[in-house]
Image (tube, rainbow, N blue to C red; front, top):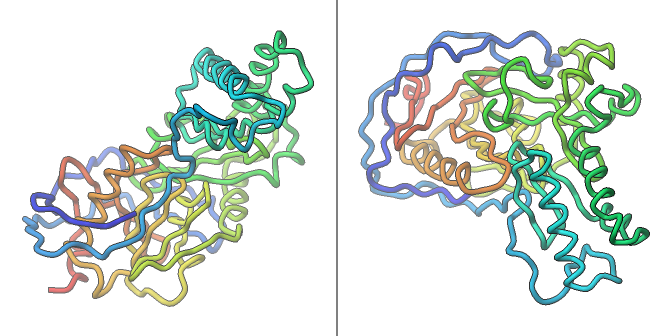
Length: 350
């Protein structure tokens, strides 16, 4: 995420959507707090005319960058017996099958990954290997069966046993819209505004949202499952990368979940918390609130988060978030304006 600013990007008061502030149920583990404060913080109107750019950072690669279709040699992931024409036929069948299932997606032909717009990713390597044992006349049926299983692990009746699902549970953090969900769907916990924690199942070849049918079949409460999935996600070892005053998480499809507790991956104390951007599920960038955070920094972060959210795969949220001691406040980013809480304004350098 390269931070930069441009004239005309304003930090300003925008009335927050009062009806979208959700109270979080007490379902997180003891070391992860989700704010129950539903009040709307006071905001300040500032006309920002930056003269310097924000702190530079190294751009994030998207979790699965979209690469133009291969046109010369077979990609590294394809079976060695396949020619480029066979690879193209395979990808075309997968593409058609996903559309027939109503799954809008992008195809990364270089890495053999299909990524759905709700963040579900499907590794096609194993599928391709399985098809080498079947005649091409049977490929369509085999691909349809494989993709249905990958998109709905355990089936729509939630038949994946709890013993199988338990160690595979993870969480991602994003807006309801980014998950293509409504309240009451999936296994979801509101955080603040339209931001939620959603439980996923990480399998060898896919990452899928867990369903309400699965929750019922498991005989567990939503709070139990969410707490377990949060703990298992935050306990995962991740690669962190310092970038000037920023700390980032890279190469992790669950990076956005680090918003739940940035202290797990950022060393040192930050009494005033962290300003965090999670434009995609695979991106997390945070900076300790202090002298390094200025209005120009906020504007630069907002501009880049907006761009990444709009252009990269697996979008999570275009907004910025202020994490402090387990509480999360939203800095809503809309049409070149950022809503900054007065409490945060009071901590910025004069």
